[in-house]
Length: 279
Image (cartoon, rainbow, N blue to C red; front, side):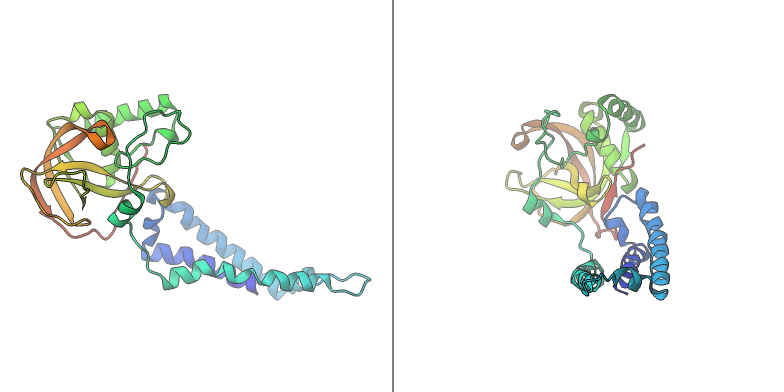
């Protein structure tokens, strides 16, 4: 019976995540069909386990006797029961704890770093600020993909980075920074300020998911206002400005920067994440 309850619990988890829409906070939604299919797989396993239980198959397999007079199966079965409460922890977590969205607190705790240029370095860490999907492709395939992305975004004089294309366009800009200088760009995200920045400079970030929450990161660009401004971390804004480049000493690298022309405060979106759409 514990197996039946466990399977019911895990089936409930996937149904609950899809019904509430919280599945989008764990995976790239283009893979949502996989987790949705899992509901039916778990449902089939639950029904099968119920049938076995009703037919007494569990008792028949678990109670194995030998001539010594000891019921070894019962002992092993009882010992295995201690593990079942652990299987209910995910269910309890989903029911009792709210789904937390990533914010600037994660950036402060983990920090963020720029790309490590030695791609052969086995100790390279996950990339932040700049989306970088090169590790998922061979170099030739990646270069071909980015050339296609450049043809899509590089020919435009005005870029409006909506959620659906945020990571794709952002990666293209970082790969071809000089080609985007002077272009007008509009994007939204949350503000983040560090001691290394001047009072008129902020990072404008979005948390992005490449495949799932395990490879998520904080991505965006440095934005520079005409004069000093005062925003709190996690304040959401939409900005419009001109793309330029600058040498950023903490990263020891030339990075793209947006000279802000217009800024508007906005509410935090219901889904603050953006996703990589690999063509």
